Image (tube, rainbow, N blue to C red; front, side):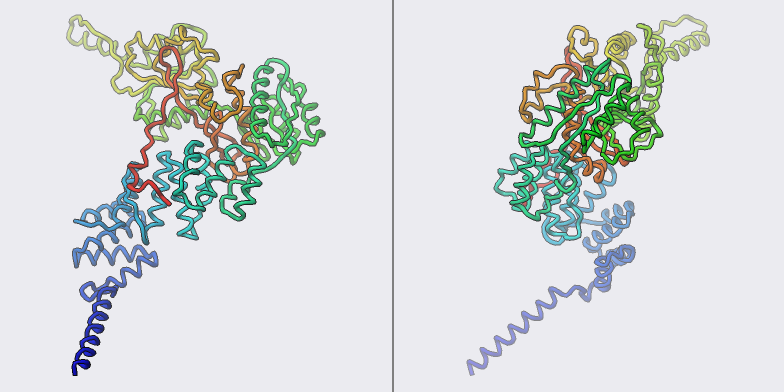
Length: 593
């Protein structure tokens, strides 16, 4: 009898537990009528119906989770206002989706300074995408890459390879080195990191060893679009007025070539002459030498002749740009274009919240062209060019143009009008217009040394001044350049302080003589030519060169993003990057495995 009672008790217990289990996992509880249908809409990405269903559920049952899913459905449709409204109904919730929605809404408003709790489970892939996006925007490139690598293991449909390559190429070499010795990285991440380290300074032997060890690892994306040309011809004006510039370019090219001791490539130099007079003999000499790749020409007359005669299938990297309207098909272009610097200045002004700007530019065709380019770029990014003037390059007195730009003439007119109205003499002090955030000057060193003191004379000394790289003379003269103190300007870090690259180069950068910017041009031309196919396929993806951060547009033209410096005590001093957000702000879990 006791045994029978025990058995009945056991059966009753099992039935009770089974019933409890069914109640716990049932997706559509009786008290939540319509939940199953809302879930089906959401999972099938029918967000319009999902938003309506979850909104109705929230109105009926006042459950925070329904408001969260309604908000996310609106977010997926791009209905940001409705999404924000639904979040307003959330009272108390730790649902992981809530922080993701808030972060995405913040990003949609242009704010990437967001906090993300580390999320596991079903929302992990979405967290990783967002984590990578925020870190990339805030220049935490290694963290972005590691998130994308993990994402590739969780979402087989995610197309992450190109973004991983881009972030790892942008990551500082020191960060890669530290990560390689971090015991917490996974085997998959290790392969990516090693590939990135090798790709930063191509070494044929190291590349082959990597491929042998890692086989079909997705890090092969670093090497799929690189070429291995051995015979490279370089067309330069080795004689005439550009010979010193060409010599600096040659030095940079040779330095880049010998960075890789296993390199079997050969550079052959051909003289085009200073005005293209020797171009044809240089061109045919390069072709007859069996050149597989051609770098150059440099000066415009040779480039114009090349555009007329070239029917070769040999790829060409010009060290300048084609004339506007020319057919760029078949050419890569690597100019040190002032238009790129205009974009750099406009971006910096906006980043520093200087949105109302005055402009002083030289009275010349190039000065007006750059002024127009600046106004277009600045306005497109939310800035306003409130006044401008073009100063004559043939004089040392720019007072008329400065007074006009600062609004001082208008101040005098207003004083005279007031004086007439009240019929008595006024003691007035002319004042510059009060709505000025910054002044942008396009000027060479000699012009800038006159403009800055005259701006100070007219009481504009407290308005920040910005400029382009042309403000920097080849030779630093602290006595002359003390008049430039305070001016911020864009330039490559290598030009400002060559020693910043000493730890990654196997030659003494302090011994570089001549034109450093052309040394950098030559160095980068040899460094990037194996990657031109990759850069063309992955447009706007950046490569860190001596000339700056390099990227290529759809027409095969390479553009530069430059560092920033400021004159202090007559010397240019590199400025730190603009406050990239620390990764600690982004997540409370800094070790993503």
